[in-house]
Length: 212
Image 1 (cartoon, rainbow, N blue to C red):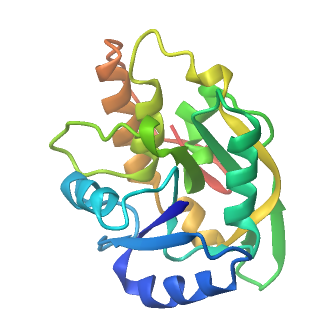
Image 2 (cartoon, rainbow, N blue to C red; image 1 turned 45 degrees about the vertical axis):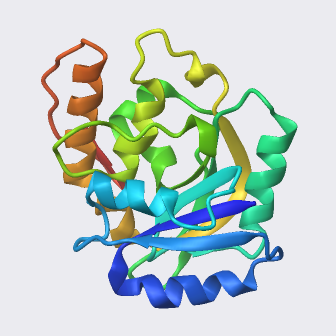
């Protein structure tokens, strides 16, 4: 069974309604409030994860503004079922530009350094329920910080087993890709600090994505 965690209450009702188009009914959905659609309270996330039903094997995280392809939940489930050692998986995106055109964005195989620079897998990803680690931090949370938490342990080998599921399984607006800019910087600082690697993190430019 899969739990879908949607970030951002403003689009939540429509987002939950769209999930009815999924090709499986073995899912439940919960919304984590977010004023900007990016940042949220860690306590709200913890409550969402413990909400009934709490028997899920996999949790999918994404923005309430994203539109999942009808077979996205099945794709996450099948990929993680085939790769028992993988704690998490992410998918490619389709971006609607300002002029209404659809542009696919293919991420390719997982790259930890690129994760640090762009936070790219954190737009739409799934984690095994027993591998989720909610950071014990006072700062506001974000999906990119949650994804980075998989690597908070200095000896973590998760980077070797993170799955990339080829294919466009979620659609968003181009503005949604840039929305996590501030959250990315904060998440990277918090993650490196947790690993005992304090560093100066500066904004960068990367076109479609925020970057540090």
